Image 1: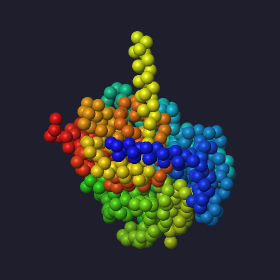
Image 2: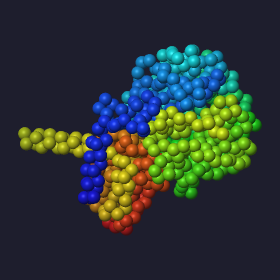
Image 3: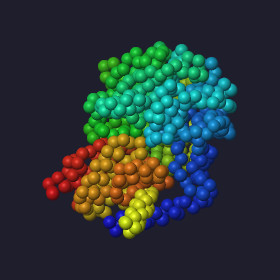
Image 4: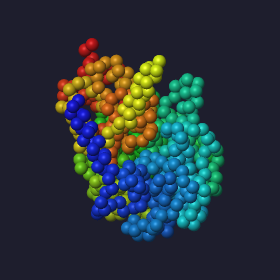
Length: 404
Length: 156
């Protein structure tokens, strides 16, 4: 006990010391969004690094990140080497979720619009609304944000994701607890939360009333999206299968957002009454093969996995990286498949990639970089036939790596 | 009556002061906190976060068990920076024990130092039996498994 008291006193002293203004150094944050963590007193707070980036059709790279109660949109014409001064997405300040599993998103509409979506936390813990703003001038300015769902209870509508279907419809999909709350009110059991979707057929200017995709999702893992070869959106999420198996489910959505099908996608049978905080990622190859990465505990060991999802089960399931591999993402550009993940080596977080040029039969491995501070989940993004890694880190800012 | 009111006021002040005391972890202090050699009595180190409903269930159970058995010790680690919600969540279920939060060090470094086998799922609980042994369990636990993990299953 004495030992712990000493430890407590030492750490309390460390807090006081760390609250003093820090000298300028080579490790100063490069991007202004990272600077948001510094208060006027010089005390360093944890920055919410959750961020997204996407290439527009003209090759410009857009990235969105949180700074205080605003989302800022950055633009790069040279694949992330330099970034423009940011544009403000939400002119009126509001609360914004900006962690790795619940980050702002960017999408491009077929009529030239830029969309940014995010979750706005409400007053009660774990509650939120799904918000969306549209730009008609390439991201220089945005319309006032709208809430995409009609249900306005102060409950969970969080962990939104956004996908543009092949026909141009915009699909917003999120974790919703209205069914859990109803069950609680009538004292009935209900596993997990639910997945809901809202669809826009006018480029994100308005949304039809939301519909349920599935009951019994996990509560706080990101949802993965991809567009199938027929243009229909696919969504992959962590589900709570009976009694408490937190595996993944895959749904193909119809144009009204309801599911054409819901299938069990992974079979690791991780039985846990808990929150994995670790969502999957999905990409569809031109031949229709569905490539996925996900995290599960299997045989008592938590690991990142890769596999191809088929109606008959998973083909080629294997580990991604080593024991510490986490936060895997996947993208496909042309016939090339790129997988990213981070791996803590005991001192620093390493960013790794694997690339396959033969449909996932074999992969070559690359080391991309490292971060000694906090870092967001890496994002696999594409531009034409090129694959990139986008990684926002506390000390270095917004980093882009082209995968050779 | 006046004396009763005075004592009550002092207790409220003392409780508030205690509730506000959090210690921020870095990788070094996290490693020390979870070093088996430092725990000479049965100790629960409960990793939790404000957005994890199952964590609150575990914390409620651990709080009850520690209050009922003076041999046990509870240490909580919020795996997020200090906020009003962190404090309120522990106060709401009257969780005793030393309260840690994540400090400014890289979260992955703190997590690795706490438990290299832990991959971020919550709740995650480290049970020390006080004799140099440690068991880590992810997810909600019950009274019997907690006692067993603390090496108390056969003791009264």
